[in-house]
Length: 277
Image 1: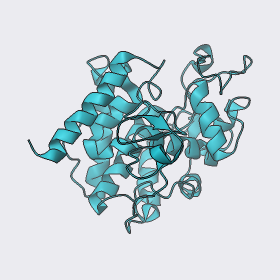
Image 2 (image 1 turned 180 degrees about the vertical axis):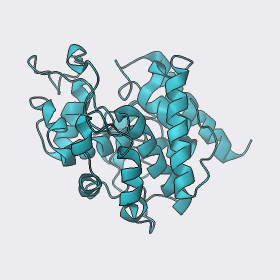
Image 3 (image 1 turned 30 degrees about the vertical axis):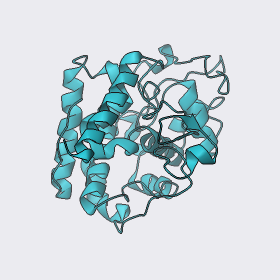
């Protein structure tokens, strides 16, 4: 078996084992990385987590590694044209809360903080990542219609195992924003990275469109970007886990695939293999 294919199957197995094990309470936390590291930790070649040189230096395979990968010449702003963005949001009903909140301008401003998005690998790799991101966003928000999870306040996702991100009992950590950021861990960690108080003011995600897109890009870069070379299906598994994969919600999986393949078509790139989880 070719080394690349063997490695791909090994990584996919590790991701799915993490999901099945249910070590964390919900998608996006269940399979945080190949190692199961927190967003602020690096994963070393032996799949251990840490923040020192032995984890973030040579051989670092995930997380805030010291050596940044080489960027290609793709201009994401030239790919995500106003026509492309409006082609998504125009399908939302005029009464949708997101209709006057989400914008291409807010996305591009947020993008400035994440220069590796859509810039790693070949041009085709970049196109597939952009298509994948917007495919998930389209499904999560109903073409940018929704700002937050339906009936969200009744689904407060708080896990007190994450002691460094203590829940404010007066706040709800339900899904908000383009990728429906959820749980105190993600609100706390993204807030620290972006520069807002996610634990005490989680509603900032639906009050500030730039921060809203920043949380989506932060979430993507931590939970999906590392797996793009394994196929679109693995990005579904890494973010949604057992909530949609393993025949739990095949309709949702299929809709994500449909959006992704449609955007790949618009961007003139083959969607690749391994589309479902």
